[in-house]
Length: 231
Image 1 (cartoon, one colour):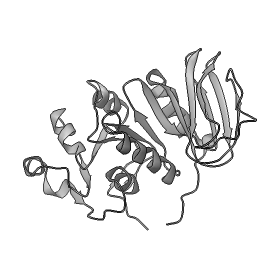
Image 2 (image 1 turned 60 degrees about the vertical axis):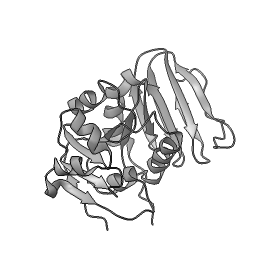
Image 3 (image 1 turned 135 degrees about the horizontal axis):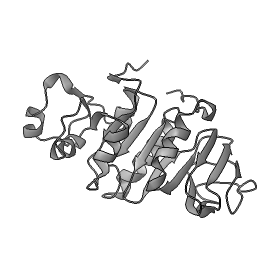
Image 4 (image 1 turned 30 degrees about the vertical axis):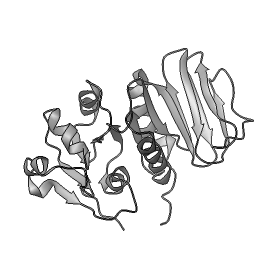
């Protein structure tokens, strides 16, 4: 059993060392006031004027000067190299929701590794904030009320099927697979969406403006979560 490093009943902002937009950190902290850094995200946190409550990772991306600016009791090195720093952080956070900033926009391989962790940690509610979108792993059931006409993209990282209400092009008969059918650039005419997914593996991409309804939808009791995978 993995013991939590940070435990809170409020959402947590997790900051990484990727691209960080000018308002990303403040937007996340407005809704998730506890700040945790994944390894090199400590640089970004300090640059934004914040000292994270915890820094979690293998510490291969943190300079000595940055480490010296953070109280030692907030540093939590995890030296194993079998997982990413994003994954290490998710494993050690106990929170109803994680808002991730600084995980998009620089290296494609890092972005793919983050998407992989979203599926591996399917039991966790995580929303990634990028320059134009919010990205999350679809739970078994989800209801959202977003802006009418918003673009809804669905990308599978595993084979699964889903059913929908409120999408312009229904997905009920689509055999989603990473090497098969995908669902980019769908739309919601009314803004009200209902999804039911058979198995983990679907990433949902929505406009950044949908952050609050996505947070609400993922935290709603009826949305449920996928069970944790055995490792």
